[in-house]
Image (cartoon, rainbow, N blue to C red; front, side, top):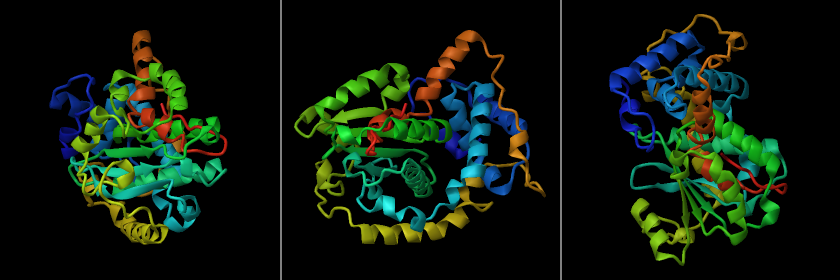
Length: 338
């Protein structure tokens, strides 16, 4: 069993399974998927397959369908090939960036400032978000597979809410980055944000809802959440920490360019993330369009209901928060992430 499978159990309400059962389900999905091109084969480590299983409450058929859809998406969208030069414009205002500190669990931190939106292009915003997610994953330590989202609502207003961007964000994050979010901190959200959260929350499973934390700088109880998660000396002053260095686009660009140089090695067989991938590499490309996605059509009716909720929540342990987060303002509005 892979290390990732052992260490990523901290999501609350998932169905408990013995490690032997978990590995059996992972092996079943691996057989169902078959041979894949090298990068996709590397992506399908035991830890990755386990994330899809958790996102579907260990339902093999549903997890297999979800994973196959991601493999098709990755083959077409090629998120691992996005480079800084392509998305630099979207990053100029610091609306999303990977912080230079981690939380006390070793998780990478993405800072999001929806009030700093600088683009009306849905395609550009999503492309940059995907780049940031991939970069956060690239920088995770070997024993960690989740990240933290810190959403700063300073300067956020109604014009930063976009249904179109929200829908696309929800689609990408829910379907293609399941179980990657450890916790989402909504820092000082304005009063008018509450109705949006009220609408989204009923559609999320308890496990996902528990990943979203509202923190207010004038509330000592919620401020303790920050103290428990972060080293205050390293945390940015905008979030109540002592680091007032702020975001510098030039310095950040250099960091990202250096990270970009590491990407090819990350997607090479033999790198830690591919260690648990036991399938051989095909000698010719696999036609992903020939893969059937209707693998959960015979699931019991009650199971379908549960899974649809887990689709909204499990995979969007990130998303719940993102909905708010990603109200990462487009001039058109709020990005909801369920």
